[in-house]
Image 1 (cartoon, one colour):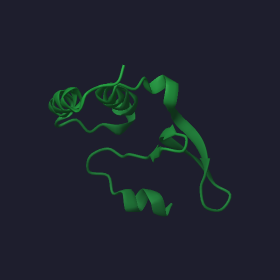
Image 2 (tube, rainbow, N blue to C red):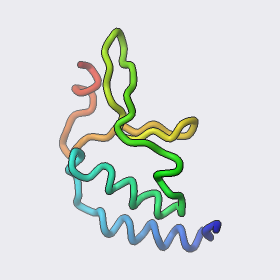
Image 3 (cartoon, helix red, strand yellow):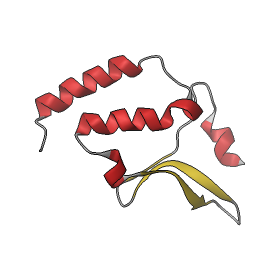
Length: 89
C-alpha cells in the first residue's frame, strides 16, 4: 500500500519527536533506521542491510551502517563525534 504525503508527514513528525535528543550510534543505529523506514512505509529488511562490509581506500576494510543497493549508503556517528577524524584513519 502506498502512503499519502499527509501520512508520511504525520509519521515523520512522530519519528522526529520520538528520536529527538538521541545520539548513541552503536546502540541505536538499527532501531533508528527500522523506525525511519516505517515513516516511508518500506520494510527495511526487504531493501537494506546493516553492517555491510566495504573496501576502504588502500587495502583496508570496514563496515557501513546501512546499505540500500543503488539507493543509499549510510555511515553515522554518535553525537559529538568528528566524522572528519574517523574518515581520515
